[in-house]
Length: 202
Image (cartoon, rainbow, N blue to C red; front, top):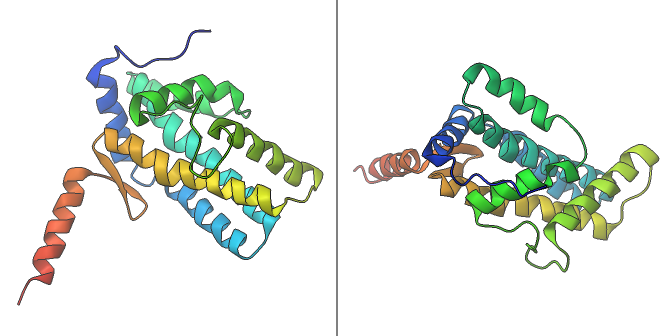
């Protein structure tokens, strides 16, 4: 099967993608909350729980925060967008999303998912993601105990996805995460300006 590409779709799809994020500014909130909780659990040495919540942050992150907006942007009929979007992302199984996720990150994040290695890691990021989900399933469904190494890797993968990769995708659309919400660069500049004016008042 040929690789997925958004080239040639034009600025219309990009505009719809941007409008989705602006219409759903809290789209990343649940993933970010799960990430924060997993990091706390890791610091408290609760390896199993840290692994599970990091896995949740990753899954919500790539499905709800990255894939659903682009699927919605590709469906031009407003009435069908939500139906197609949910149908395309409701399934489990990471491998089936590889081509679409890789295309999103290549087009809007300037990142090659096939070769990308996060800082401090020795394995491909995609391989680490698959390992996290495999270990999480072993913990949840079989009662296996997670190791410190696995929990640390899981939290690291979640951080990279949400703290590094997602901001790059948003930046390519002129958007940013601010206080856990997606806002436009113009809105952020306005907020900063107003704050500065308030602080400089005599």
